[in-house]
Image (tube, rainbow, N blue to C red; front, side, top):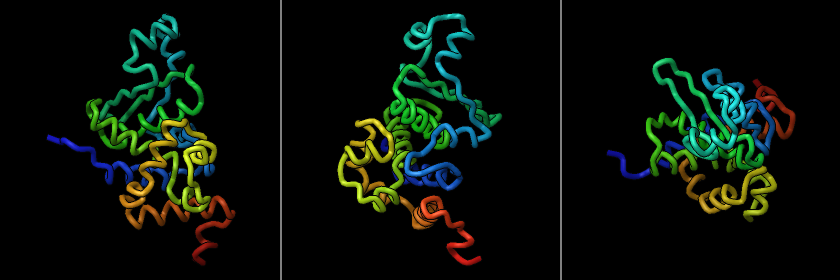
Length: 196
């Protein structure tokens, strides 16, 4: 029985996801990232409410598993749906989507304290790559909020765990995502960067 979150696994899963990301930095375009994932569909609470012929409020507080969002997975077919509350602010939606993607990529079968802590770790690493923290010299919660377009609670967690999150990243994952960020920021391709 698992009794503690596996933060190393969650951190590296986020960096593996970022290694496939082809969008902009420093603010990760979570919608673009999810649109590139062929195994995930997005549904807003408004869409779900219209389909079920109920109000957004009824869907949110009587049907949905959370007022923020949740995911449903068909593990046999390898297909997932992330439902999210589109009435929440942009920063909350971004974190919710990253958190639910974490549940999927970490293969969580049930929602509990351990799986939520792992999904939170995944989300903060996905939205706040440590390479950018170092490159920009971010040194406050407010700087995290502004740089990454994240909520204050997410910024506080990312700031508080930056040392341990950095410790968990494998050198390979750190290099791959670092190269991707460098290429985006400078406009150089990896072939130009490494001369191949």
